[in-house]
Length: 387
Image 1: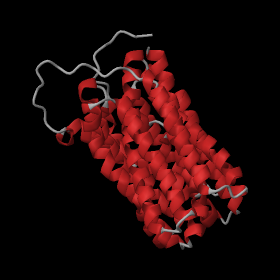
Image 2: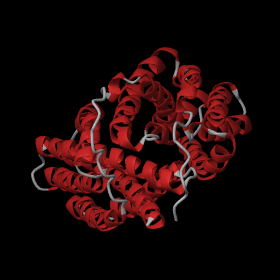
Image 3: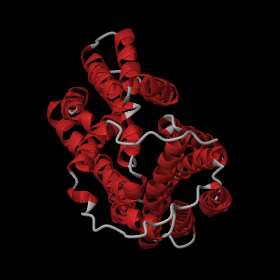
Image 4: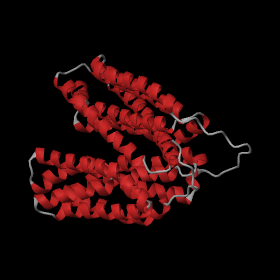
C-alpha cells in the first residue's frame, strides 16, 4: 500500500510541474494573442498569484475535512478549468478578463494541489521511515522539464492554445483522479478532539516557515534573475545566461535526488546548515568569481545549496500527522510569499546596484535560514517501517 502511494505521489508532483511548464511555455503566445506589453502581462500573471495566495491558507482545513486525495482532485479540476479558460480567452474572445479568470482558477488549483500533495508525501515518508520528500520535489522538476519539452514543439507549430493547454489540463485531471486512488486512507479522527490553537500561533511552525521563506527566495531568485545577472554582470551572450540557469536547475534536481541519503545519515539540521552555507558561498562565487569556471562552480554550489530547504520544511511541518495539513498550509503560505514578493523587490534593488550585485541580498538571507534550521529537527516518534 505504501509503495503504491509513494508512486502515486511522485506522479502527482510530476503532473503539477508538467502543467506549470505547459502554461509557461505558451506565455509568449498569450502575450501576443492579447496584444499586451510586458508590464500588462505582469499584471495579468498576478491573477495566478492571487488565486494561490487565497487557496494556500484554506487548503489545510479542506484536507482535514476530506482527504489529501480529494483535495488533489479538486486541484486537478480547477487547474484544468483554468488552463482551458485562459486559452479560450486568448484564442476565441481575445479577452483579458476571461484569461485573468482562467489564471485565477489555475492559481487556486495549483495552490490546493500543492499543499495536498506535500501533506500526502509527508505521510508516505513517515510510513516508509526514511527521507523521500526531496525526491518528490525532484519529480516536480522532471515534470516541468517534460512539460517544456512538449511545449517547445507545440509553440513552434503554433498549436491552438485550447488544444494544447486544454488538452494537458484534461489529461492531468484524468491521471490525478486515477492515481489518487492509491493515496493512503485518511487517519481516523480522534475520539475526543482537543481544542488546539491555530497553527499560525505555533512558534515552531512559524520558524519552519521563515526557513522555507529564505530557501524559497534563494531558489526563486535563480529562476527569475540568474540568467539576466550573468548577461548583465559579465556581458555574456543570451545563450550563456540560459545555460547558467540550466546548470542551476540540474544541480538543484541532483541535490534533491541524492539529498535523502545525507538527511537520513546526519539528520535535518546539520545537512541544512551545510546547504545554507553552500547556497551563500555559491552566490558569492557567482557575483565575485570573474572567470567562467569560478562562476560555473558557484552556480553548481548554489543549486545544491538551494535544493533541500523547501522539501525538508514540508516534512518538518508534517511531523505530527494529526496537525500536518494545517501546518503544511501555514508553511506553504509563508514560503510562497518569497515567489510573490522576491522578484519585484530584487528587481528594484537590481535597478539601483546592478542585477549581479543584487544577488548579494539573497546570500544574506541564509543567515536567518541558518538561525531557524533548528526548528526542523524531527519531532516524530519512532515508527515501524511499512512496505
